Structure formats: structure tokens, C-alpha cells
Image 1: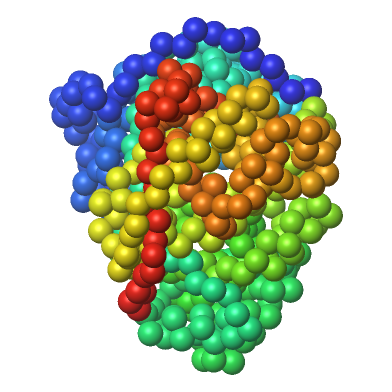
Image 2: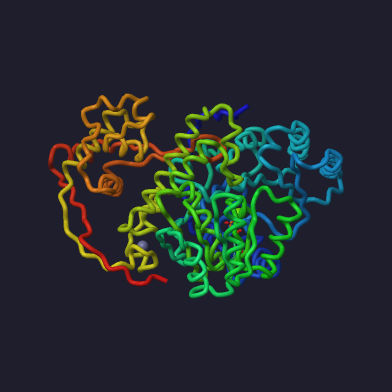
Length: 538
Ligand code: ADP
Ligand code: MG
Ligand code: ZN
């Protein structure tokens, strides 16, 4: 049964601006620095690592929002004896671990468990009860915290919690903190921008594999990379083709047996192969720091997923490339697969299909919205890629900071200014008249006059504004909305739609600012591109 948290008053304490956590005179500082050098082989700490460790060691509940590759693991693990429990283990093996945990001489200091295990295993909870009552439960770490686990803080209120996630927008953060019951937690967060990743979207044509081959040979010859493919068959075909072209490539997907998969992972970590063609099943737990490129052979399913998959490149901070090959027919293909439920999910989102409390219709709708946002990302050949990604995480990004490290910023553009106040007003009115409960893609569909099932079901096709934006050039309405979001007239309220971390977003109106717009006191001017010259990007 799903854990329903009671709403609590949360008191956030911003950790990043508190100098206390940067201090180098905590009792554990010397040991900490020695371990960072000896155990991890690092010369220094990354942003927030020292601060997070100091705050959690001081006994506070701490919530960390750090992008993939930011170095979260270092804040809670070292070379200490550890064990793990998972539902797929033999019962005898699990028993052995439980016995060890209860013994006076327990050798383990760290126990890894899956959320399912905590939710389902009474035996485990009873053991944790014991440890807690003996005062031996020193800390609860919740990595990938967007996955839930509120029950633990409720049961063990005196044990500090360290919750970490790379998946958090402003309101997902609220939800996670609420769900985990972290009333007085200290929050450390940092930008989700990854300056060393170079982003571009390329048209996907029949000669896509030749393009990929050429791209790798010209830019990343003999370097390490991942090519994300949509289906198992695609993985195998792409790998085979790349082998023909002379690359050391292999494939990785969910229907291989565990031995095979382990073998490929090992070859890859030892640099015996340098290209892995994989479904999104590949990547969780992959820590290779020198991945120089991530190529998407087909459309990712969400901006969030895309950001995370790209995040596996360049963890060492060195320049790395992220190239996405896009064509519209892939959208149709992915949508079809989502509808059929035959798509290989990344481990984070697997739960959505099991979660009986969220209707499968609703999940499908959210999935398709996420996919549509990805489509408009690909079709937007004007705005900075970083800006487009980060706005999804509730982060406002000034494209100047991109410094031409995305395909769009590297274009030579010729602009005209266009007054789009009328469309802006109509869109704001549409959001208000539909009750501020729909996503951007949904509002856009209504505005363009779509007659899709969903639009019909909600009876938007009888609204005055249904189809009011028919005459606009492709992509323009969506740029107007983005502009309104940047100007704070509209806000994207991103919500976690279930405990497993799947997110959806709803457009809301900022009333005072919207009033200025609607009363005609604030014109909306959009820069529109007349023409552009694309220099070779990579
Ligand atoms: P996350 O869990 O936040 O995605 P990881 O903990 O897996 O990130 O770390 C990503 C990579 O960064 C790893 O290869 C790790 O060895 C490296 N790393 C972490 N901290 C440091 C540091 N202080 N200095 C250098 N490399 C680091
Ligand atoms: Mg991690
Ligand atoms: Zn840019």
C-alpha cells in the first residue's frame, strides 16, 4: 500500500549559504581529508561535498540536490564493510545477513536495501527497530530520494537522514521533503547545469549510422561513449554496424542474461570495448568518469531522462559531447511503444507501472506529455539547449553562460522583434479558463485547435479559445509560453505524480503579473529569427 504522508510545516535551512559547513575544524576533518585522498584518490572536494558531510555528521537531517555525476556517493560511502539485501536473493542468504546484523560483533557498517525491501519486509523493519532501540542505527541514507521511503523517518525520528537526489525541481523538492518527513532539514542544492557537456540535436536521416561513425572518428576516436537506442534490436543492429566500421562496440539491454551483462560491463570498464549501444537500462550504477560522448540514436522519453542519460558523460569534468539524432517519426514510434507498454524503462521509473493507485491512463498521459516536451526541445532550433533543459528543473539559466557550447548558441542569428502580446494574452486566458490544471503541451494542443481524444474528453473543443492559435508559425506558441514562464507570468508547477519519481507539470498563472499583461500595460515582444547560419559545431 502506498505510504501517504501527513503534511507537515517544513522549515528549510539553506546550507549552501551557511559558512559553518565549510569549516575545516570539525573533529572529523582530518580523517575526512585523509579518506578523500586515500580511499577515493581525490585531490579535493567537489562543490557541497564537504558541506553535506559536515552537516550530516553534526546530526542534522540533510537534503541534497545534486546533478548526476556531482559526487553524491562520496558523502556516505567509503571502504567500510557493507552488505546488501534485495528481494531476488536466496532466503538463506538474507537470513545470514539478518543474523549478522543482530550479533554483537556485526561486521557490517552499511546495509544497502531497495525501497521495495523496506516497504515489504517486516523482518527487516523488526531488525531495524532493534538496532534503533539499541542506539545503533546511526544514519539513514536515501539515495535517489525521489523514490520515497517516508516511513523511515516516522519510525526512527532520532536517526539523522541524509537524502540525496538528482531529480528535483522546486516542487518535487517540496514533495520529497514532505514524503520523507524532514521537518528541519538543511538543504544543499546547486545548479543542474553541466558546463563541460556540449549539446546538439542533429537531424536523423537514413544515413544516421554513417553520421554517428563519422562523428566519433572525427571527434572522439578510440574514446569511450554510450549510444542510447530505443529497442533491444536497435542496440544489436547499431553495435554490429559500428563494428563493421571498425569500432570496438558492444550492446547492452534488459533481455541479456545477467552473466552476459556483467561481462559487457566489465569489458567496458576495462576499456576493452569503447562504445556501448544500450537501452536506458544501462547506466544506473555506472561510474566511469571518462565517458566522452553520449549519443541518442532515437528520441529520449523525457527531458529529465535525457538530462540524466547525458549526465553519464564527462563525470571527470572534461569536455564531452551529447548528440541527439531526431526525426519526427521517432516520436510516433516511441509514443506507440509507450501506449503498448513495451518500452524498456530505466530502473527509476519502473515502479510507475506497478503502482496501482495511479491510474494507467493518467500515467500514459503524463508519459506522452513528457515525450512531447522532448519533441519541442528537439524542434526548437533557436533557444539555448541548456536554458531549455534547465527550465524543466525550475532553474533559470542565462544563455550567456552557455558560451556557445550548444548548437543553438553557436549559430549566427539574424533577429527581428515581433509583438506577440495578443497571443500571450490568449494563452494566459486559456490557462485560467481551463482551471490551471493542464500541462504546457496540453494547453498548446487546445490553442492550436487539436481534436485529439484527450482534448475532446476534457471538452476543451467547446471553448472560445480552442483553435485561437491556428494561424501561428510552428513552434511560436510554445516559445510564447516559455517566454511567459521566464517572465514569471506563467509558472510551470512540476509535481511528482507518484512515489516512484515520475513527474508531470501543470501551468499556473501569476495573478499580479498576468493582470499587467491582460490590462495592456505590458507588451510581450519575442525575438524571432529571420535566418541563421550554422557553423560546423563539433
Ligand atoms: P552521483 O551519485 O552524484 O551521480 P557519483 O558519486 O557517482 O555521482 O560520482 C561521480 C564521479 O565523480 C565518480 O567517478 C567519482 O569518482 C567522481 N568524484 C566524486 N567526488 C570527487 C572529487 N571530490 N574529486 C574528483 N572526483 C570525484
Ligand atoms: Mg549516485
Ligand atoms: Zn546554449
